[in-house]
Image (cartoon, rainbow over all chains, first blue to last red):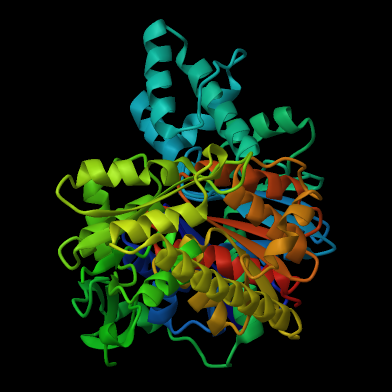
Length: 315
Length: 302
């Protein structure tokens, strides 16, 4: 049986899926990146191999997306290395062909994608600031001493969400501390945080965009039912979350891998190879480009980051 | 003869042809700073307050680079170039700012403030005087320089026209020339798009005499002269290009107003806003550019 592997290596979590030729998900894996994308991908590969080992599947293509797409794509010899917007749109469309709006909040990025007849017509991403993204929520959860996974449940138990300024993470933190000291209930503060994430998103990333249904809410933050409910209240319409919502990017890149497949069989033993990466500051000129060199079993396989020939590294 | 230093940042990109032609006509030697590098930004950041925009930091970096390499540096003070309008407050303050940062540095004065009756011509005559030339000599050099500048504008206009005729995907890069042409800002976008075989049109490649007419279609009154040109350029090109990329340096005041106006009034045109700070990683920019190009292609058909 033929299969294709898609990987979405984000700042917070790493997702992997294997699909068959009809784009059905055969196996999936989802775990924390923990600041080490290479290690996380190895773990994902171990999990995926375990899940499909009884079903003679040949992986004929690898696709990567997410912020570490280039690094992992190079390591695994991927046939498709694509940005998150395209990967998410393609993944979601394969499951929901009529979707008009995709709201996505990830670890450090948030984006909105508008579609019409299965084509991306407009999109926006947060520009410089990561306020209101997953990393913001998890750091606030830590401050309140609760697990980010329980965040949604606690939020739903609140009847009276406190309003919290979430325009800027730093302001939100001081507002949060202030509210705690004033004596607000924890659950109300948590619900307030969920609302502020949703309204911050709608006022920044989604500003000026016509949000039409069906609306899908994706990304790690979509697992938080508190934020989902906040979106539904603010948009006054139903927001769909898929149980595989976090896998859409990986699914999209698997589909792209299928499309670009060179029909070479991917070998899972690659996970046992020793990959090393190091950043070298090129001293060729005053730009001091950071050149990333990737080594496999001690042999250089690729390097990038240089702006001119002076920083070129011979492979 | 004293050597003049020209810092490649901010107003340099609006006036370099005029200034250089003027000095050429008077046979005054001048040097230009290098293209921007990471080092230049670092130098500028050390001298600059945090809140200033990236372009200002880059400019100060260039001044820092030049200060020991020439006898005097041309630092313009421009308050207004059209009667009822104003330019960015950084351009108002630039001269005083540099004078206070570098008390021992000799500055070449250049003051244009049309609102308060200091015309460009007088600025050049005064500049000539400081260099030891008579009024008539400076005036003559200014006239020659002005002719050269006009020819340069015509060239830009023609290159814009020519680019519009190609069958390739066309993208309008909209922003201040000092951002579009900077090695650390606009050139990064340019290099990426060139690699993808895209025709790049710069916002300043529109006919200058159509600015006031075109801008009326989007807003009847724009207080900021340089941003008025950007708005006009957007209206002028939007229907003949496939997409527009707004390039802005954080935190630019006038741009924050006009970018918003463009985003709200763009209609069906595709617009991408890229904001530059000193620590933009290439991958973040490429993610946005790549997905923008995918969108222009109408998505990937499976």
